Image (cartoon, rainbow, N blue to C red; front, side, top):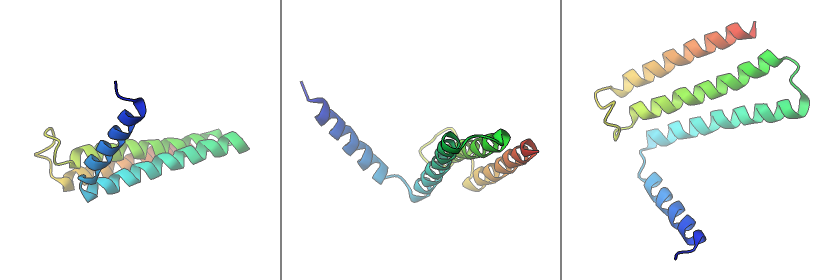
Length: 114
């Protein structure tokens, strides 16, 4: 039976090899998602340390980051050439949808701020 550490190392190596073949535009979207999630985590950490006095501002910031990350994941799914569900959708249309949805999301968040 193989050791769990060897299995984990093989898994990490195979994931790294598969991700190396990922197109650059998808890697950029992945970095944007990581940035949005990291920003949300920083806001949650700040709230835990300092407090959440203007709670609606905290919620607006976190929901903005999480919502933007979700929309970016949707963009990544639509732009991916290997995804057969969206093969007829041009990348420009997917990006326009992403921009429009982000605009609606941030209008709702600005309304929530009061």
